[in-house]
Image 1 (cartoon, rainbow, N blue to C red):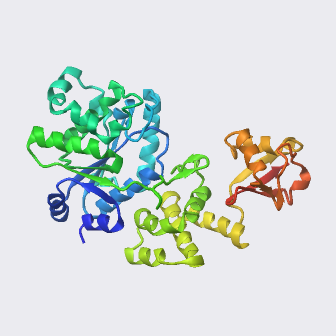
Image 2 (image 1 turned 90 degrees about the vertical axis):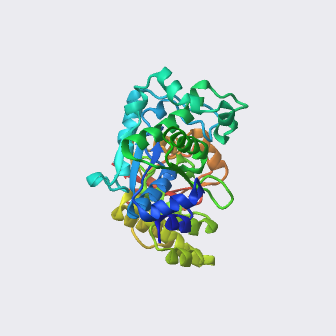
Image 3 (image 1 turned 30 degrees about the vertical axis):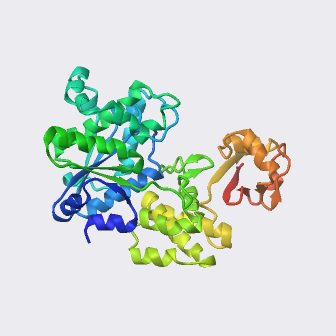
Length: 406
């Protein structure tokens, strides 16, 4: 089975240019391809993870990935799927984020012996001569066609800046540059990148009269079309400091029944026969499939030990077996005793705001041990702890251990 068939069977592929020609090349030669990552935060999130999984499948199929880090394009910001202009970042922040990305990518992609490349588009974009760019590239872009692209249409009513209008040209230039530098003939990316990817493939075909291809990947969405990977605290990050391995595990443990098979297919390397078997389970049995999903995805991101610890913590909370040691911990000092529980939890980052905490308490969604917390001014005392520990439940599924440090 060729890698194209693998990606198709697992549900990665959304749109392809010149499909038959690309399938033939992937089946018969080693293809250099790239995916771009703009450093808009100091960690990759689970949406990036899906594209890294596609990259890993391609590499396993004998093809060479380029992870293109957007040190240049990140200075502008992609308007795709955004209702407002992205926050502008300075060079220091962009470079810091790039270094964070590099460490995370190395867990999934083998960069040894030039099996994959990591390249920063700042190397060429920041040195570009504007008039030269207009002459070499600008003449190949129709403004009418650009404005018809979905990524720009969504911004049209709120106002699209000339600054952002250049993003498509910069991304197309990246593809052309990698074509000339590295023989890269395929750009892959999320399906919201279709217009930008088409622009790059078209630029190469126009300027070089040689084949170039585009392929978009499915976006990670729930069965009813909502974007997956959002939590109460925001994005589901790959950095364990921003989203703990336990929180990460619990997210996948609690996905909707209808999404289990899709997630197993896209986010694990389990054989498809096993994916289909697990996805077909019904009733209570589907929980076993969710446990497999949570363990496999957490193992890929955080390692075997963290996945085991997260599984044990979940089993301790929900079935009375296993160890609670790996449940997320909130350290409480003796000096905090007598203070408001709400303030202590806010200071620990359990609530994004005190108003969020008050709302949850009013809705009956906060429990300390077996007691429902009904008073937002409730004080925390020594009596709340057994052996210097107390179990806190936020909502239906989020648990924390309060540990008293005397």
